[in-house]
Amino acid sequence: VYTWSATDTFRYSTCIDMSGNLLGLDEYTLTKLRLRKSYGFVDQRTCDIYTSQRRTFRCLNWRDVHQEFHETYTINGWQDRVLAENEPGIKPSWMTSTVYWLCNALFLSPCFRHKMSAACGNADFVFVKQLSA
Image (cartoon, rainbow, N blue to C red; front, side, top):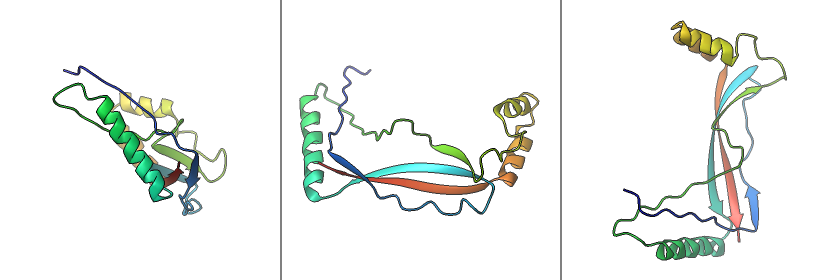
């Protein structure tokens, strides 16, 4: 039974993108991108401020004998998976959510998935952000 829940946001002054370049999109006309995100700190001072704010938050919100604490890293509009076209409008006409759901209704989803996998490349990319206080 949950008896208490609280949230807070780390306040930072700048965010620097350290992600690097996304390579390999030109190998296929369509690429299934799996996106991940990570963060770090520009300097030890920012890391210390973050650790202090986290410690203070936990102390101020100690309400139960057993306490769970977890962090989330949120980016507005974030999507874990994206289908990238190397030219706008190059996606085939059968590659729609309507066809996908029709295949599911007719128990043909393995066929749709196989055709989708054959038509697309795969790539992973990690967005890395460095925060400073």
